[in-house]
Image (cartoon, rainbow over all chains, first blue to last red):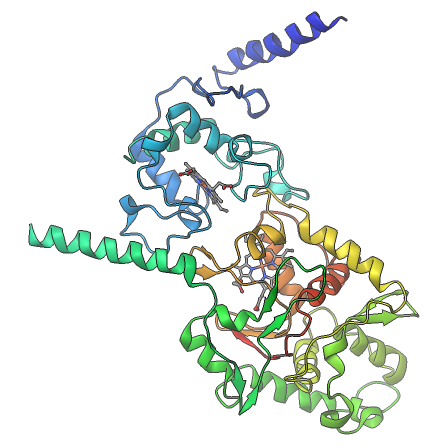
Length: 152
Length: 283
């Protein structure tokens, strides 16, 4: 098998598989480009309200644990491990926001404290019940990205 | 309109409060327990990532800090008293109590816990106070080893450590193979675990002084253990380690496993020079 076939296989097989599975991009098949992740993980437009809910939910995004967000000032206890997300949509476009949520290590450094929410590149000894799973589902990522897009 | 303005004023105030938190870091205060000054800031040992090591007390809210300065107020002192009772209780086939061999703990145990973990030549592993208690029970008292966190293990450990109140933590890493366990513990400290992919250093080094939700992240020092937690009562060190690891959504190691004994050795070293504060009060 020469390099050309290898690359072809790498590039096309996952797309076909993803195509079969209701057009959802699997975590290991996400294409990280220089400008972020430009293709939606599901092809379904993200829902802003559902995104806000996933953002807040301590069992899902739990984003307020680390980020302040003026839009949610009614909720108590905003952390500051990461920067405030006020106006974040003016700092990053959709593709970059998607990349940050999918796997912040792709955007910042491998040292970042921010978890990868749609990544299987995780720490050791993952609790059995979550093995092989991502923190957010593909659609939840799209929803959170849609919500972040409103933070202007 | 006025209402709207007030609400946004409130939001701004909250935001500012959050921002103050980002640079507030530890308080500028001195921990004095019953008139005895504790070392709650110390120059870090060589090779330490920080210049200064800081007690977790400096990161807690005023009311929580106040509970530790007076041993009558400190809810953890009840457990220390229970530990004292155990010290004097005969158990096991040899008909002995701790006091039978060690007499008055305020003399025989003074300063002792500040130098643990030590090297245990018999097991060729580090030994902490809990395991030393078990060793005495099985080898000298003819009693059964305590199970983790059971039967008075926490209370007796708290009593013994309390005899070192104020004494600075200092390990002798030249004992046996302790240095290699320190190295192993350092690996554990910097290894990311769980679905959230965080190491001890992610929270207690990279994010020290910041807020994760309502929690002000300290250096994760161990000089106050067993600690009295306002939510859950007297808490052993290995229980805290396991809790922090669990929070990364990882399976956690067994108490007193090689992994956690290595971690205890390394993290104790990270607090070199801080006074033993047992029982500290934390949220």
